[in-house]
Length: 326
Image (cartoon, rainbow, N blue to C red; front, top):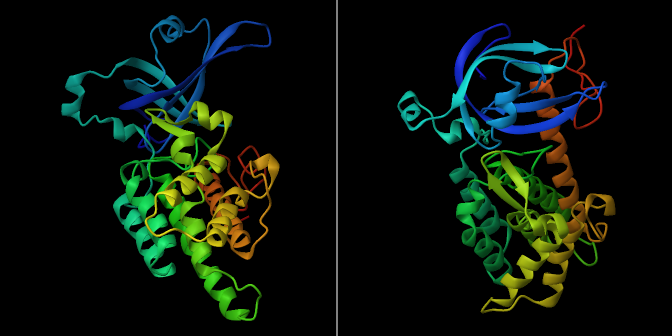
């Protein structure tokens, strides 16, 4: 699907990511479906009087993979598919190159390298001792999950490997900023803790391993994710890991690390019970917010179908983005 230009017809494999029952203004039911491959989502209506309406209602299953022949079109309402043929994927399709991963968006970066980079940042930015042991230990304990985890269900880095891509960016930026500010203001009392900023950046989203689960359609919230969220669960995971350390982590350092985690989203409406109240927490918050917003803008510039020097406003940022040109 992602290889088709507007107006082209072709055969491809796709995941049915969503199927919603909707009503027209006249009260007639129809379905809004979303088909997805690794690089493109197509959401469009199946009207109640369309030839595929009954099949869509009775046989199409969200989370299942399909082989599709369709005409792809770019419209003012986004990408559309005019489906000519469709059937569920069969075992024999593997010989034609099908695999579930080909229908799942993933990071452009190698996940093994990103994981190794995070461990290296921890070992460079945190002196040997219980804080480094805690930070690297949590990474190593959850390594297999981290290699596939998304950073969110939507909006930013919501793809396989997105967690590592986001956290590596945040950790690099927070480490750099903490070093620079510590050099600029060496007389700050108490001094800025570079090690706490690094550990906090690496672990700020660790609770998402309990907040989310991964399905063929992408990340979705667990019961604990809906009821508690990743911030408090991240604090729980850090506390649990600290309690298992052979060499205990001092109370002040643990308190500062916990504060980075609970304050990294800054506002109550974003999930944080406290705003950043330490230099380390402030640095991690803005590194986190910058990376999330930058990825949103990157996606808008890549996906917006409108023409002209600015994009449309119907996007996650709720604003137009300037492309350039006349």
